[in-house]
Length: 313
Image (cartoon, rainbow, N blue to C red; front, side, top):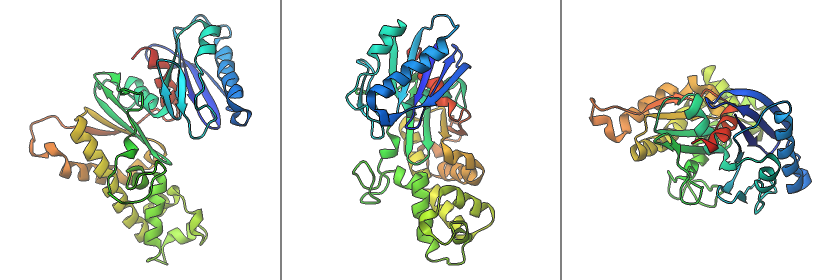
């Protein structure tokens, strides 16, 4: 048995997970980020104590962190939304619970979780992306998480698809996440709304553009709204550029799509597949195996399961 922890800005979600990636027991508590690094560290210990009450020994603890980590030392290198940069969050847990503690980036952990027991189960080579406020991701090669020389591999959202394009939070321009994320959809939709004053999008946001969110765009699209249809067409074009690039680089068995936007899979799955089929490098080889694009299935559990499996894979 293993403990997997998904350390979020609001909540610490944890579980005991068996060797097959199945959750056996859960625990969720507030992160208490306002209390600083010490409060967060105590929260991590608390969820482990709660989970292990009346339980036997565990093999390891894994923690998915929203930022960059050093998996060898247990140090958090940088977390933009938590006060943990430069803090070692493994040492005390190892001492108290007497087992190895592994750190991983949260998106990488989600990729591992989906490959172990989710939408990519059974595939040895997988590219996983999570489409949410930003675009995260992870790469599985030969059944193992590819973390890179500095544990920072998998920042797929920061691949530039439009040189000199939209300014990204990382400081570069034209990053994929500025187009393929929920915030990217909103930016695209706002552009089309200006030319379509009769769009349902205006009604859904109450006439206040800053209130527009990604869900409204998909709702309007399902209702047949023209501006929403143009937005989704442009969105799929942007999304497909990155997907094709990654398929051409890795040629994985599966390309797995998760995150909040994947809940609207019905709106973009078919046009995305068509766009990828028309652009991928191996489109000329009809007899060769082709990467399949699939939807992630684990939801928020992916990060927990993947974190638990850090000590296995």
